[in-house]
Every structure is written in C-alpha cells, then in structure tokens.
Length: 417
Image (cartoon, rainbow, N blue to C red; front, side):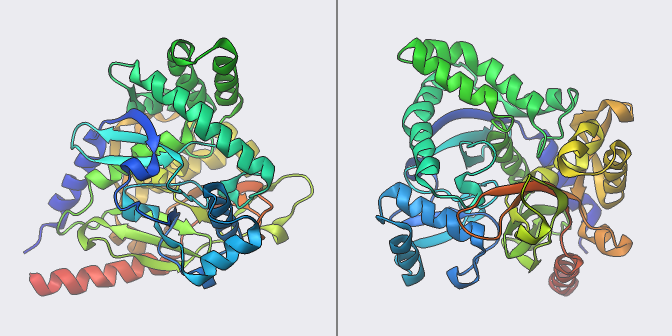
C-alpha cells in the first residue's frame, strides 16, 4: 500500500532543504544537457510550431537571427516552419526561461548548483522590461542588447563569480528579499539590489576597465528583474530535488508556452498534464489593453511551485501597483495558498504573518477537492510577434490539468496497491 503522506513529506523536505548556489555563467551549448546542433529551448510544455503563440514565435525568430542561422525574420520563420531547427521545453534540459523562455546555443546562462542534492539548473540573463526577446520582440535594438549582454556583461559576470569563493547563495538572498518587500516573481526590486551589491566589488575587480564595470553595474542596477533568472534557476533546482518520488501527489513543475499550461507531479515521472493557458487580468502599459494580450506564457511559475511568487504576496503588498488589486488582496492570495499546500517553508518567511513560512508543496488532491487552483503572478506579452511586453497581472491554471493528473495518479497507484 502506498503511503502518500510520507511520500509528500519527503518531497517537500527535499525541496526546502535544497541549497541553490549560483556558481558561474557559461555558454548554453557548453553546459546544458542535450543542447547540440540547431536546437532552441522554450518555456512551457512541448508545442509544435503550428500551434506556437505570437510571442513564442517572435522569440524563436529572434534567437535564429541572434545565432546567425537566418538573415532576416522571414528566413528565420521559414527555417523554423521547415523543421530544420529543433526546439524543446527548457524543463526537458534542466533549464527554465521567463516568458517565451527561449535559450539558444550561444547564449550565456546562469549555472545554479543545489549543493544539498547535487543537481543543477540553468537560465539566461535578464534583459529588463518592455521590448525584449523573451516577450517576442526581435528588432535590431533587441538583438544588439542581447549581443552586449552575451559578449560583454556575461563575460564580466563569469569572471566576477570566479573570484567568489562560494558563489552566491540564492536561497539566502531570497529569504532576505522577502523581508524587504519582494515576492520573488514579479517583484524583485530588493533582491536585484542585493544581487547587484554582492556582485559589485567582484565586477570592479573582474572588468577590464572602469567604463565596462560601470556599464555592467548600471545595467544590473537599473533592471529590477536582474535577479529573476537566477532565482528561477534556483527554484528549478529546488523543485527538481523533490521530483520523482513514488507515490507523491506534489506538483513539481508548472509552466506555460503561450498556448497551453502544463504541470508535472513528483510521483508521475516526466509526463505533462496540459490545458489552455489563462488570459491574465492586470494592468496595461499606456497604449495597450486586454485586447492586445496573449495567453499566459513562461517558466517563471517555477517560483510558485517552490513556494514564492504569488504564494508569497503577503510579503509584497506593493506589488498590486504593478499587477492590479489592493494591498489586502496580496494577503488573501497567500492565505488561500495555504489551503492547497502541505508545508510552510523553513527558509522563506513572511513578516506580516508573524514570520510564518510561505505555503509550499501544492498537493493536486487538495486542489481538486477544494476547487482552488494555484495563483500566478505574471507579465503580459502582446499577442503578435515582435511587439514585446504590454503589462503585468494575475491568472490561474485550468482545473482540468489537476483533475487529469489525479486520475492518472489513481490509475497508476491503485493498480500497484
């Protein structure tokens, strides 16, 4: 007879005891498993080019241009449609990417090591807000920024991290940032400042000259999302530490590709359970409305999976000025998530709740029984390729993915027992 409660406790204990350390930055092709040839990684569950959303198509086109596989957007689109470029979910390669989440072989990526359990995870460098590749933009301005990030900033940060004896402890940084008004997903102002502060003396030593050091530090300091990508890799490393435990009903991945949302469950291997990605409800940049929005997209829901993001909104009431709502809504969001999780995080705590641990370990049984799905904080991409970010808001996954997962769990484990 399977012991679901014991299996679930094992999962959350592994997730919470994981200690993700940012070690270095290297080319994706040199470190990400299976990143050979003309292959691109993307956010969310698997998807065919014919079903790809506008922002995902735009990011894939931009990546082909960045790699030099095509001379212009039309050529890149034809290449992708022909099948000459393979593309897989980031999650299939120990990686995660925000929004479209596209990773190409030449891109520099963060390498985060879970020193407790030995697994690693990867993510790209963050471009900032607005017209950027991860939101489907691929103009020359976007590509020029990516080249500078890759050729200048990436190298300086890699050399800076090499000067650090222990790397950067992302779990500790996250714990501190939650006490400073962040929630770790859409609001990372404190975390990005902490991150930049830790890197600054190393960057000054590693950069070839003062001008380069200043440009790198200015880029990091001006971008309130600088730390998001290493945070996502850290959350991926934490969640993966709890994946693959037989008999567990805990969700260990939740991701969207702009068309579908998919989840994985610890006790059900690498199978995806998918349904339509939600339409975000939020605030829009000037000149844009809900009519411009694409369905939800990105691997950044790995933060909610690990117990932060929308699950930690009570720590970040000011986030409502960016995603809509009132401060009390942030508190209610966190309190609701305790209902569908089985643990309170031992490292991530919320001052406003008496330093109660964040709700951690989504149990698909509770989701279905209570009719409560996980909350998601998200950016909003324009539905057309090439435009970029148009706002930020809130959404939820479809209940059907949890129902399908629970049916599959019953079929697999009732037979065994």
